[in-house]
Length: 151
Length: 163
Image (cartoon, rainbow over all chains, first blue to last red):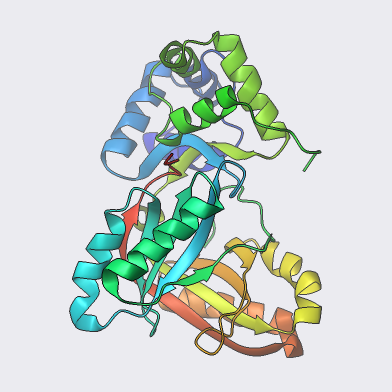
């Protein structure tokens, strides 16, 4: 198999069903007809280059602790400072600038709902700006990874 | 989901330990087990159980879409009649190009939307095409919609638990 094909398969085929056995990379290597150390080296490269953020578990929201999606309308001249303040909170794990009056969107995760609420309140107090709380009510999708073969 | 399985403290420690990724070594579960002072078989059994019960959705490579050329990230948001959302939500969530689909509360008057569907594409034109498919699928139950493109990713880490 060509190196590019190996890379494609490693990225595309193991976003789910990553082997849960003693030597998972050896299993992947077997399936692709390469060596275990090749798979490890490829993944280390992909991780170092930022193509793969991690090999890890994707956990269903609100099963361990609580979380919410929050949005703020931040005046343009304050965006850098407010975004930095929000990102600096350890409870914030995603923070995006988006094109809308509500231009800052972030996910807050903490041990329980009271801690989530306290984080939102504290960001509102520190910035003097309202923080809109949009908690998940129903999930209509199970994240099974992302098909990289899609056009 | 197969029933309610209650996580114990060890499960929680295991989830936290895997959030930043498995170590890239020949026996990653053994390495994890050593860090947590658990038998490796127990680590794998617990992960298997959490996968089965849906607490862990998947274990695997988490690609960075942006680095793979999938650069447009549109959060499509829809104001869907309350009586229709329970039926329509699963249909939108099942579309193969929708990576996340959630019902969330409205926040009137600034935020009238109650259905969120995340759509990725190589560029905005590709995202727009996909959004048009969603619009068609939702039909007359939609009163308004918008697509919020991300212009900057300011922070992204795995789930982290803060005590």
